[in-house]
Amino acid sequence: MAELPGIVITGASGRMGQMLARTVLESDKARLVGAVEREGNAWVGQDLGEAMGGAALGVKITDDPLEAMSKAQAVLDFTAPAASVAFAELAAQARAVHVIGTTGFEPAHLEKIEAAARHAVIVRAGNMSLGVNLLVKLTQKVAAALDEDFDIEVIEAHHNRKVDAPSGTALMLGEAAAEGRGVKLADVSDSGRDGITGARRRGDIGFSAIRGGDIVGEHDVLFAGPGERIVLRHMATDRGIFARGALKAALWGQDKGPGSYDMMDVLGL
Image 1: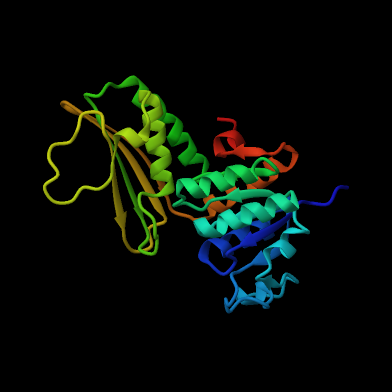
Image 2 (image 1 turned 180 degrees about the vertical axis):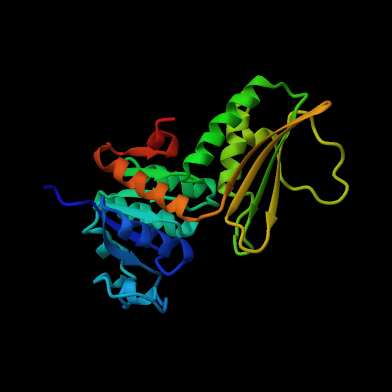
């Protein structure tokens, strides 16, 4: 029987990192073989299981990502843009599938990730859940069916520790709406309203961001026309949906050739 794919978790001490670790440990389709944290983090050198408040797992947290990735078939990465770029280069060297759930990338970051994808499988998505990716598809179809008499607004809510806005998922939805209308999001995006901004431009796709409490993730796509509104909504109540999606992506990528993929590819949408 072939050995199960080995998984490395980056940002292991964070909420998402711990959720990813638990998801892999509960799976009968993968093995947890490594955990990475940044240099100076208090968890470095500890057993991951004990650091999370449980029994020892035999997986020591390291600040040397290349060492951890050298024995892995996949890397699950929900960290920060600069860190994910560095991990992409190292995962490519290790020929490991790199699953990126990090958001907030700038164009220069994405160029480097695309370069790494020439040598290894990279699956990157602003949201790993099945429901959100179905919402993306629905948003594209509804936007294609309605003309510019309908204003489009993407409204998102997250916990008070989220550092980027609009969220990666909101941007996915905005891109889907723009694609449905046959335009580029960069040309019609409206996300900086404050003060006297003037009337809304016809055809713009707007973004509104809410930050508060422990909200896992809520996304509405509002199509507001004369006399009627259509609202598409997804509400996440369990961060585990993202971890399960990330693991699914890591397993899906095992027999794929080098390239840049997203959750639409993984889910066959």
